[in-house]
Image (cartoon, rainbow, N blue to C red; front, side, top):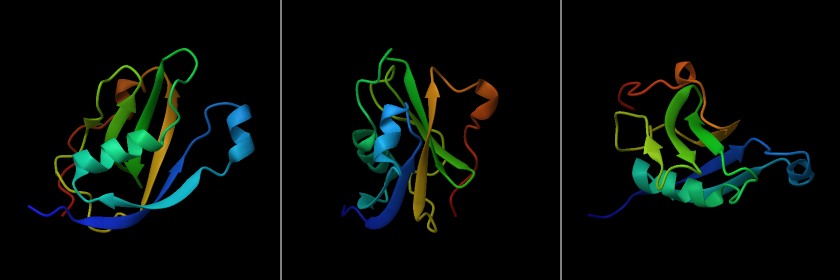
Length: 114
């Protein structure tokens, strides 16, 4: 099976005042449309080894929560029912949290991307 790809704009929050020096944190890259593969690619773009080892990123397309990347998890956790990026997904943003986001912030299975 051939993997489909598309170009997205990826943005992320700063993690500290020193990180702001390199702001804005914005790149355009080609990613797989398969959500698991895309999330693994996004995880590789996020800062590694953040002090305290308690960093968590909520990965979003607009208000649609795609998944969670965390220093405490071996691999990204998918939150979307679909296995593919939404068809109109052109920008993905990573919200930074120290520790886990409040459970009320996370909405599992927000419906299909179709």
